[in-house]
Length: 266
Ligand code: NAP
Ligand code: GCO
Image 1 (cartoon, rainbow, N blue to C red):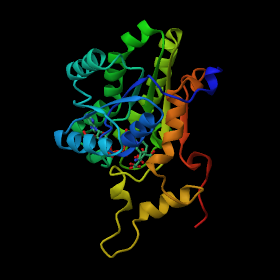
Image 2: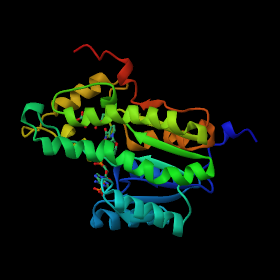
Image 3: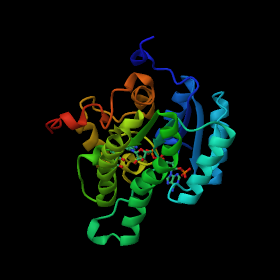
């Protein structure tokens, strides 16, 4: 069979970080639908328990871990447990992420550092933890969840844009350093997705009017709407499957065309 037509994840173990809800949950559920065994982590025991129940409702027996992705010993222990009790990780999705929307001149350096720690350093920590087994197996997939802010800036997101820009280059560097082991590392760059992370940008104003950012983003998106997390799942499956074995170091933007569009004339 032509492996480049194989979109199945049968027999594969996927670790999706921060997959208790939102984009990570959608990707993990999609991976399970095409055959993967799902492992995920959360930094909150409450979210972890809720997520396990949600996966079970979908018929998915997910392996959940309470683990802060910025805590290297905890990540290494999680990966070791997955290798011991499930199998080595075949697919890592570095999805866990936070954002702090604060004007840079008002941002505490501790806030800036925390965003960099979760959105960039943690991707290094998690990739470093899974690479040895992928190198031994001579195959692996690492997918970093990038952003429009991997390419563009905007007011109040200096830390987030710095992290997501760095994540784009970390993606290219992992590609460069580990392609020789048949490990592919690509980025998935969502546009504006309706999740809890962007909920504040869609919140109606006190007078009931539409949030200005909501109108702004719809004018910047050719389809004129926010995307759903499920719209990322096909591209995420592609990047995790054999079908993408010749794709490496790329950022696949799933943005409804935002990066190509000057925006609708007011
Ligand atoms: P979300 O609903 O806020 O989910 C973020 C996830 O990250 C949560 O499940 C959270 O899990 C986890 N997380 C945060 N800090 C963590 C930590 N220290 N350790 C472990 N897990 C942690 O946001 P989302 O919209 O789904 O975003 C998911 C990813 O997509 C992020 O990397 C985000 O930057 C990126 N992204 C989002 C959009 C968008 O428009 N929504 C667009 C482009 C990129 P717990 O709370 O359970 O720990
Ligand atoms: C923001 C949003 C964006 C999205 C996403 C866009 O405040 O501009 O949160 O950053 O989360 O990253 O791709």
